[in-house]
Length: 167
Image: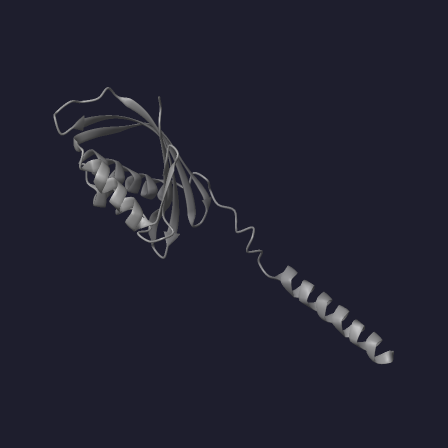
């Protein structure tokens, strides 16, 4: 009985010491406050976003996806379809772009928010036209887009992209 009580006290003491030690450590769940409009980070990710938009205008699947994580963590959602991973997404882009002679994409409105030191959310409204191989240009359509950027080392990459075509 004394051994149990002693063990219980030791366990409680160890738990209290551990809790106290955890309190003295910085909280990883709540990182230091970040400026949601950090001008340097916002300018960096907006330039990357613009690079992808320009590549889309050039009907360049590899160029569009060059800003992605280029691995299995990347996801792309459009309408009711989710593409998982760089390879699956690239294959789908190549199929789609093979049908096009060209396209235009113009950013109408955009907002970038720094969520943490290593995560940025970019929401944008674009307008685009598509020209098929026969030379027919479709009327402009609105595009709602959201990109989630993550910093990996010194590089910002898109880990998730969502695009909806307005009807």
